Image 1 (cartoon, rainbow, N blue to C red):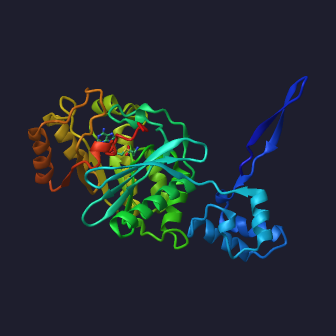
Image 2 (spheres, rainbow, N blue to C red; image 1 turned 45 degrees about the horizontal axis):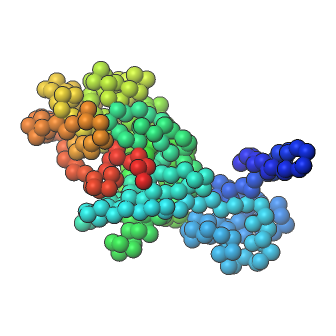
Image 3 (cartoon, helix red, strand yellow; image 1 turned 90 degrees about the vertical axis):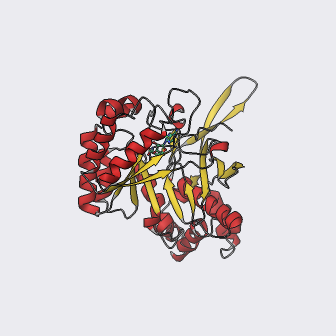
Length: 365
Ligand code: SAH
């Protein structure tokens, strides 16, 4: 329940007082059941709740006036009680390679970024889960923005709807995949991310298959176990970047709190319960994790749970401390992983010219 208030200032000749006024609730925070109850409580039929729910989610209505199968009196009653918070695409940039980066304005004026990444066979939405980020990865531009707040489930869902529209408009087919690799750490906003994914996969929302969704995490062991317990059907990617605690703590300081052994245990638990492979995301940096022992440690780490490795190209974030390692170092990783029967892909960046690539989302606009 939203219980916030705003204050309206009344200036008189002698003094000014602040009178708290109750703000209207965001109707999209209500479940279908709650909407049905609301109508019953107002001497109306429960199925009105279904109608409104459909307008809000499948039809993405932004105003009660759009809800044309409701009477004028019902629409006015809703308007008196609720608002429909929604996001807006505030600015859109298109890259030479077709990638589109959106600055998304939230109802309170804060901005997050989401990206549409087209390839020959698919279009992928890269969505944000927090304004800023809870974590402190040294190589990531988003980490430089402190976490302002978590996104609500509907704000996450709306990013997907907006990008699906762009996919249909510019690429003439619907969105095929979603990755939680935008701003923020999705497992530090667990409930809202799960609620949003439920909407995305539900027939009353976008009806997308869960297997087309990948949640990427820096690795919060407790929450990885919770994902497994909650029996989620989407894919899990872990931003590993090093399989040696001292190195990983230097580049991802929160590794102090969630060391590799705990991460490993949680991933074993995930695999035991879900039987789904993990993807490790890994950037190789010059002088940081390009030694033989770094490669050996990764190979050993990969043996614990069935997995594949995506070697990601580094997207510089201006400070010059982190630099992409040499081709030789990269090839060393590839041959050692392959010799141990571990699947490895090299991922080239997209949308670099507009700062839309991994780790570059930082609200520069
Ligand atoms: N917090 C989540 C999701 C956001 S980051 C996570 O850590 O997985 C998405 C991916 O981009 C992660 O694999 C992250 O390690 C990677 N990344 C961050 N900064 C990067 C950069 N400058 N260049 C390349 N990849 C980067």
